[in-house]
Length: 374
Ligand SMILES: [Zn+2]
Image 1 (cartoon, rainbow, N blue to C red):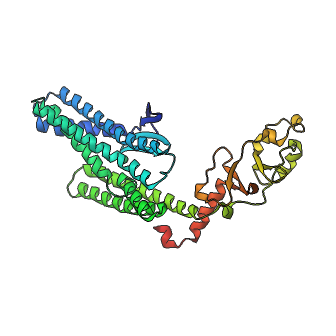
Image 2: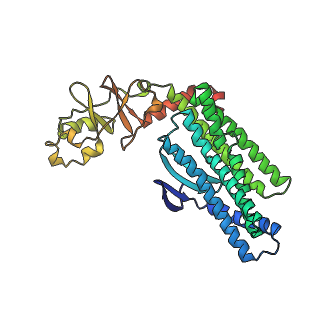
Image 3: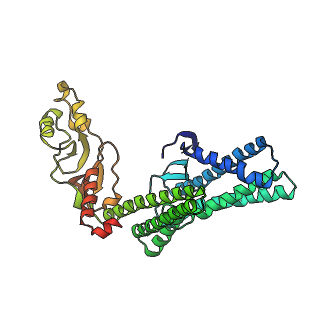
C-alpha cells in the first residue's frame, strides 16, 4: 500500500497513512460531532464538539496503529521482516516480507492485533468510568465511551474467521497446527474468507437498500475488500501448494551456455551473442559454479579492453539452489532473477523467475477445471 503521508519509523518500520485514511478521519469526527456528542450533551458549544471530534478520531487512528504495530512487533520477534505499516480507508495493514515460520508464530502474530484493540477498548472504557465517577465533563465521558466501543468492535470484527482478517489467520494457524499442512490450512482460511466477504457484502447491501442506512456502504465495501483479498490469497496459496510439491530439478533449464572464469571477454562475446541467454553461469574445470555474468556487464567492457579482461573480473555472485529443493523455498534476488542449480556442488542447470512462473502455469493447465475455479 502506497503511503501518501510518511510519519517516520517505529522500531525501524516505516509508518504512514494512505490518503484514504483522511476519509475515515473526517467521517469519524463527523459522527462524533453530529451523532454521539449531541446525544449525551445537547448544549455543547460547537468548537468544543469539533475539538473532541477531531481528537477522538485521531485517538482512534492511533489505536489502529497500535493494533498494527502489535502484529508487526510480534512478527519481528519471530524473525519475520516487516515492510511497512499503513492506515487506509478500511483500517490498517501491516505488510510482511516473510511467511510465519510456525503455526505458533502465525497464531501469536494474528492474535496480537485484536488483543491490542481489546486492551485499548478496556482502557478507554476505564477512562470513561473514572471521569464519570469523578463528575468530570460528560462530553469527555461520551468521547472516551465511544472510543471504548469502537475499539471493541474492531477487536471482534477482526476475529471473524476468514482470511484476510486476523480471525482467518487464527483459523489458519489452528488448522496448520492440527493437520500439519500450512498450505491446506491457508486454502481453508481463504475459502471461509470468501464466504465471509460475500456475507458482509450482502449485509451491507441489505442495510443500504432495506433500511436506507448509509453505513451499509461501509459494510459493503468491507465485504468487497475481504472477498477480493481472500480470492487473491487463495491464488497465492494454490500456487504455493504447487511449488511445495515441485523440485527445482523438474523446472530448471539444462544445456545453458557457460563461461570459464579465466576466459577473456573477447573470446566469449561471439558465444554470448550466438546464444539465447542474457545471463551466463561461470564454471571452473570441476564443474563448480563461480559466478554469473550478464550481457550488460559484457557491453560495459570497452572493446579495447576485452582481450585483457577475464569473465571472472566482470561477473557477479550467483545465487545457488539445490536441484532437490522445493521450488517454493527458492528466492531469486538481485537483477538476474535467476540462479545456478547445483547437485553435489556441480552445476546441472539454471533457474529463472520465468521458469518458476511457467511451472505454475503448466500445473494450472493440468488442474481439473473445478479446482481452478474454486
Ligand atoms: Zn489485525
